[in-house]
Length: 273
Image (cartoon, rainbow, N blue to C red; front, side, top):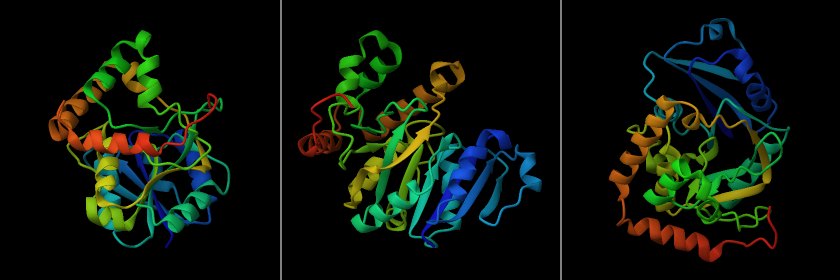
């Protein structure tokens, strides 16, 4: 099989994800869509049938990464790549096929397409590895974030060209079976948020190519829940603390090395994307 797509749900209705499913089903490179019902709240799945779909019920919701890990473990080695897909993604036919062809030709461990908002604006799915200062300023001091975001979100990059970035958005990631075999999936100490940053940097450590590919585009209806809910803000803060406890708050030599490598080879844009 070429690609197994992994879709983790938590109390989602069919209407919530029908655009995502329709987009996934139309891709020739996607052999199977694995739906993980985190917490067993999606009763509508009892009567949902599609030739490409397999459903996994998980009684206890242990988080976003843990849900995808169930797929990684159960289908280990059965496909060239696994697609980590959020349930608020949609795209035109052929976009995943293009990402697959690129990833296979590059021997890539991890790839991300161009991710845009529904209005067409770039969502900047590629970033540097964060410092505590960057995360704090972005979340709590939005008035002064423009300069911080310019560098952190690589806004000076030419997003019409392929490039390396050490942190790729987890809303839509194509990861190879070779990368999964080495990194063993997501770190489940991250219930929600920061798990994609952690995964990205660990794939970087494998030596397998990590790439942004603009020849494929997907639309992400970003929820930004940590800006609207104290509960999700708490998840974000707890995950950030766990991330910096794991990798280092201020003395993180690998962060500096990977960020410097990214900036040294980054194609620069002559105008704002």
